[in-house]
Image (tube, rainbow, N blue to C red; front, top):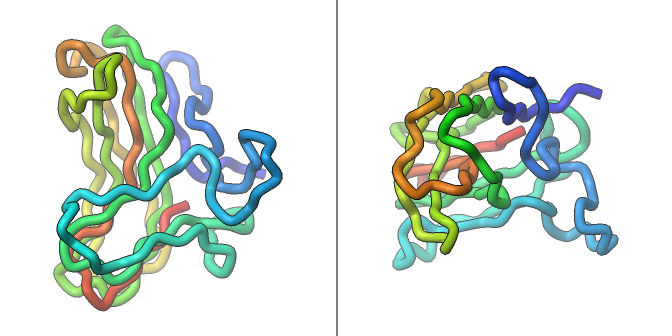
Length: 171
């Protein structure tokens, strides 16, 4: 069964993300009401619109996807942290499907953090998808030597911005 999200060192292809296909009980708690290895986040703490879902109705591969619905500003799904080295290149890819985004955008991006969890920058963005679109593969690449100073981990983020009537699925 192919893994729909690939996060790998360019020299040695291997998936570094926990639960990249959103199917596994990574922590072994046998609780299936949320997606292990991923957490919903708000980019605008004042925005009360929108919702996140671990979706079992729509998926590109397997039985689950992550979705974000009806956002007036910005919401994301964020991966658990992945330890990184500045001497290594990384590539993240995913499938995105959208419905009724209008001018809103759905995308993938890579955010960097130091050992204390402080944000050090965003280093890679995928193409931004608008409107209504069937599944499209997107990717974001972090070249070797391009991580901000003090970066020790990165997180992959699935983003939906300014789509008050829309929904985006990520797989």
